[in-house]
Length: 288
Image (tube, rainbow, N blue to C red; front, side, top):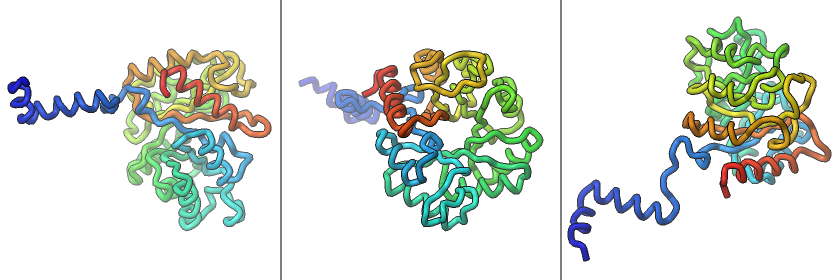
């Protein structure tokens, strides 16, 4: 027996070495920030919007996902007269939150509609606060940048700027998003990959421009570039180079949420396409 080895273990550094060896042998080495195993894969509940709130959660659970992103313009539950989430009282939000927790799911983000006034935004930040989210996804009006950034700071909730395509969104180009981020420390980015090609934007190039600001990704695909009339297709079946997307995120040491989203409503539901996307995601990244 090597007595020098055992003496080394008595020191703090030696003990750490042994711990690392044991964890490595068990396949439990701590995840690095750029390791895809540390990314939080989930689904936007909007993907299942024809279903009730509870039905949306059921489908997310059936897809084997842990994280969900809510949306304030969706219906709630029959008990609350199916009122839009944005119109619920704090007690109503508490009931919805209980459904999420009962399913063993985590809602760490929610899409805000916002509105034309800062009062509208405050109401929805209150909803976000009551759900206990870590960030909100939204497209804040340009004239309200300063006020909404301050509001996000007061609530301690980051706002991830989402993009639609040219002609429908102030954030269709990554340069526009960068302009919004300047001087607004509570803003970040939720990059919707499927919307970018509609405006002729290569998602990988956009991610490079947005480096250091990306909080989350909306994972969707599209069949062609420069056609704003197209509706999304199943991830991995369109024109987006997802292996290159994932490599870029790894290079940036991304450590956030990957949210699967479908805009097209398939029959009988989007669940099969979400399951297919989860499989594609794991296979492409070599995950089990």
